[in-house]
Image 1 (cartoon, rainbow, N blue to C red):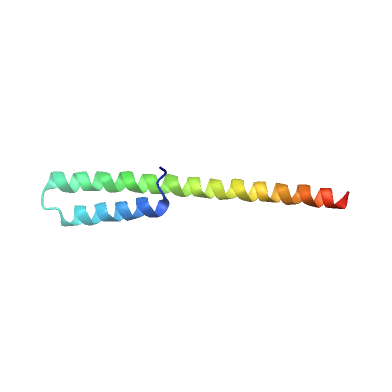
Image 2 (image 1 turned 90 degrees about the horizontal axis):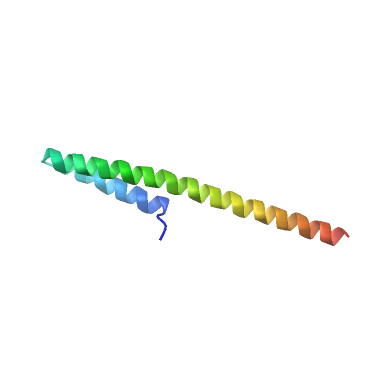
Length: 73
């Protein structure tokens, strides 16, 4: 299962809220580490989604060009 940008962002925000409400230093530190990890995963998910869209757009353009060439012949 791949993690979406939205899911990772929601988890990061939840971890940030947990850190904000933490009374113990170790709980706050754990939540801040969790937030950082989820933010990193969100960034990677966004890059992956953008790359996928680009590949799909490139494939669609190539297909349209082939169809255009075939129609002109």
